[in-house]
Image (cartoon, rainbow, N blue to C red; front, side, top):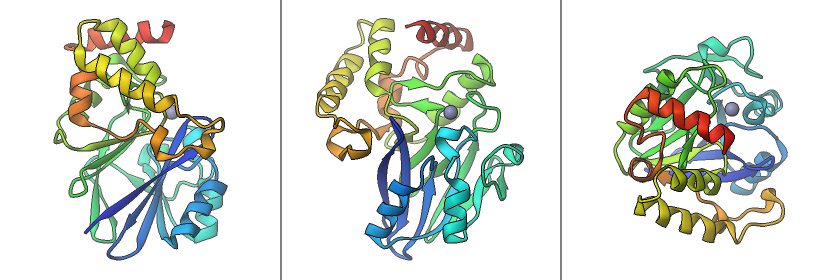
Amino acid sequence: MTLRIERIPTLKDNYTYLLVCEESGEAAVVDAPEAEPVVRRVEALGARVVKLLSTHHHPDHSMANPELAKRWGVPVLGHVSDRARLPGFSDGLEEGDRVELGSHTARVLFIPAHTRGHIAYVFDRARAVFCGDTLFAGGCGRLFEGTPEMMFDAMAKLGALPGDTRVFCGHEYTESNLRFAAHVEPENAAVREALERARARRAKAAADWHDATPDEMTVPTTIADEHATNPFMRAKTAAELGARRAAKDRF
Ligand SMILES: [Zn+2]
């Protein structure tokens, strides 16, 4: 009943995820900007990819969709509103839709803010959420197409997941996010401890992110960790979130 989750480092600091249902052997790829490292990992595991899942349309998360879809003859899933701009788009999803992967099921959360078609995939039984560039470890995505109110709602929706849900986000931004978190809440001991842990891991970083090993990765965290440390999830109002987002843009 295990959902195996492989973290594949792509581009400069992106995370691509390979999910394998160990019962059925069915696999899915979340957010693929480049094909080669993904194909290599899929072949090393002998996984059988049956679908590509996109959180949003930005090229650094989706550029390899068409090539991978063609290689494996599989659909590309994304929010229905991104039909015209998500590379390789084939199947539209909306809030509450379910995505099957072998014996596992993901629920779709619609969380527009970073982009207006952003979604997350929640695997309840495996206690894992794939949230792209909306919620990061210690931070949140930039508001390219949404408002602070929309990001506040997205934080509330993700924050309502069980505390032990693992957060698989779209980039390795944790150390810089937590430096900002420590600036916002200098008295928050949980932030200080998380920053120390992130620094220790990032000190082992390979010169090329493509060569990164799990030792240097700070992702996943958990929803409980984010409640304790993330200044955007901890914002009490949309206005407070908006002020923090604007300050982070200049930090
Ligand atoms: Zn993005």
